[in-house]
Length: 92
Image 1: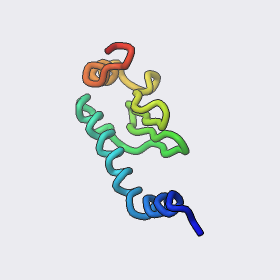
Image 2 (image 1 turned 60 degrees about the horizontal axis):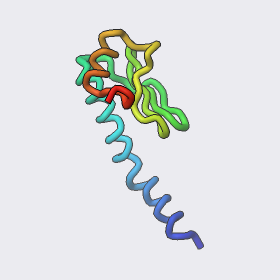
Image 3 (image 1 turned 120 degrees about the vertical axis):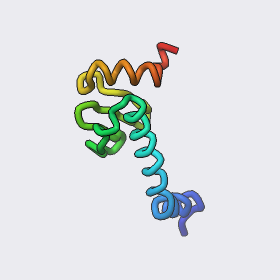
């Protein structure tokens, strides 16, 4: 017999996964739009512990790191706008 936790996990995978993914995707798009780069939005990579969004500008979301632009894959304009809108923790 499965535990209540296992049952809830299986239910969440079946019933809640799409909604959770939509929240993540919507937030990523909102961050691109806030930087004036909504046309650069796409899903680049879905990995085990991270998702990479964007074409020319890359925004990563990680389980442990949260949201971070890739400084090697972003224009200086994107990075400047991003950090103005979403200050780094060490900048706060």
